[in-house]
Image (cartoon, rainbow, N blue to C red; front, side):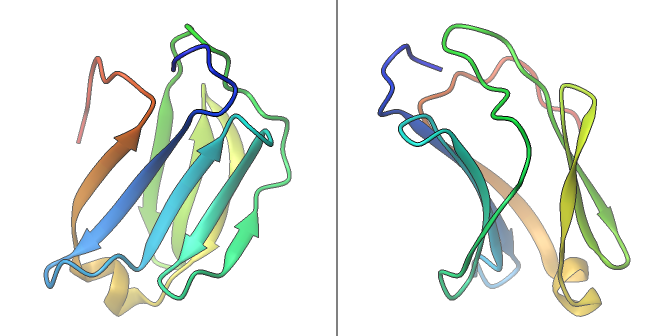
Length: 106
């Protein structure tokens, strides 16, 4: 990420119809990490903000029957529930914002 405190990034998960049922958003301005639903509902992740400007980090998303689990740098940060049908239709992950990608594993 860039050193600007106003930077942020978003991981958007899209289904086969290009709908976005859930996003993960990290904001450096208010140091929050949150799940955002298709309808704009924000669920803050109650964990220390582990992102730092100019440092590498690893985000892991694990798709399970009950929803998505999140880990940052190997530390579990919780989950969000999604209906099984929604999970089965996920096809794409988009990354936008103030980050540089170095490696993606599927």
